[in-house]
Every structure is written in C-alpha cells, then in structure tokens.
View 1 (cartoon, one colour):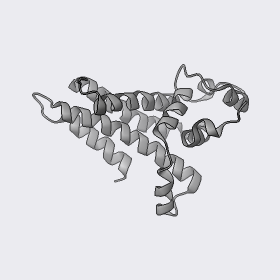
View 2 (spheres, one colour):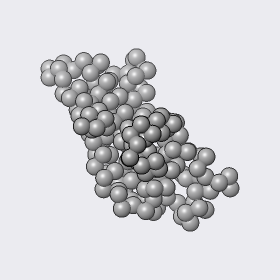
View 3 (cartoon, helix red, strand yellow):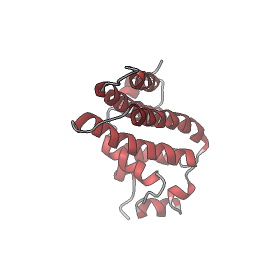
View 4 (cartoon, helix red, strand yellow):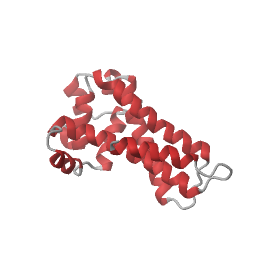
Length: 174
C-alpha cells in the first residue's frame, strides 16, 4: 500500500475509534491524516509527472520541494469561485475554473479546506471536533482521491501540477 492510501485509511480508522465518546486526539489526528493523504497524493502526482517513476529516490527527493502554502495558493486559483492571476488567464485564454473539470475543482477546494482544518486540528487547542465533522472532512479527502482519478482526462491537470510545484513562479509576471 502506498503512503497516500495508507494515510487516508488511517484517517478513516481514527475517526471511527471510541464508539461512545470519541477522543479529541483521535478526531484531530484523523483530520490531520486526511490532509496529509491528499498532500501526498498530489505530491506524488507532481513528482511522477515531472521526474517519472523509474528512480524512486529521485522521485522521493523531488517531492520534498513541494510547499504547503504554494500548493494551497494554486488550489485556491483552481477551486470553484477561485480568482486565478491574470497571467494564468492570459496564458490559457480563459479562467481555469471555467475550463477545469468539476472533479479537478473539487480536488482543489478539498485541499484548501483540509489544509485549513488541519491547521485548526493541530494548532488551535480550543477547537472542538465532533465525530460527524471529522468524518465529513475525512470523507471529503476520500472523495478528492476519487475525483483526482476521474480528472485524468482534464486538459488542465498538467497545468495544475506545474502550478502546485511552483506557485506564482510558474507564471509569467504579466
């Protein structure tokens, strides 16, 4: 089993623990694991598409250059109601959220939401998660896995991967 799949399964198991009274630690770690599952799924896709899969060590090292903030910024541009930079619109000839598939837009939106909730789970000691809210976030990550697979035919998927890697640096200044 690969890391993204292992992490999403771990997240699903964590939010099901403690059937009568769920522990905050398990719900929080479940939310965090769900985010990291999606982060590693997209990170693997970036590395596989740009450096290939023949050299496992090069692929793994390449994944380390991915930045959480740059990925979130790219996802904001592709998410529904996102505002892509003018240079991307010029480059593509239209706004990506108009051209991107529903599945790719949902992946982008899920990444943004899950990263924000991961920060809340990991750093906001006053935040309380219910089993339902944590389960919904984990289910959103699982749906993003399915959507990512369904978006294979999306013409903007490769553009999305490059922008995930480089953020603003992938685009011309004007």
